[in-house]
Length: 134
Image 1 (cartoon, rainbow, N blue to C red):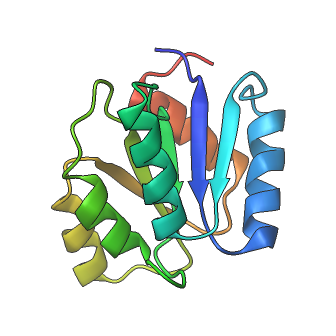
Image 2 (cartoon, rainbow, N blue to C red; image 1 turned 90 degrees about the vertical axis):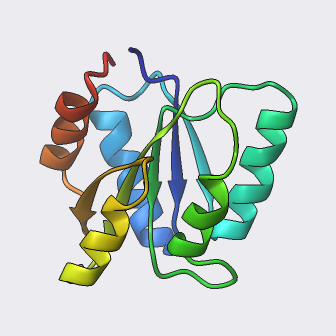
């Protein structure tokens, strides 16, 4: 599987900027990178892509703590959509507790948890977990 699109859903511009740099310096340079500042914006745009029969992102890097619609609310609504290709969601957050990890594992789309700040090793882990060719 080749990564065509990576979606970053995060309201922190510094984290988004750092993630984009990491993606571009770790063989994701050919991937299209979508960025949304909150879950609602992401849900509206990704739902629109589905309705227009466009392919979903291969990977979604999802922050939990965002205004308007947080990561959990996004997942609750996003998982109800019907996909041709199911994206792999990686929850990216600065802290996890046991309850959050248990809750995240209840979502079929959630592949794993990654602690902020994102580092190159995290991207390598995503590649190996997802069996993705970049």
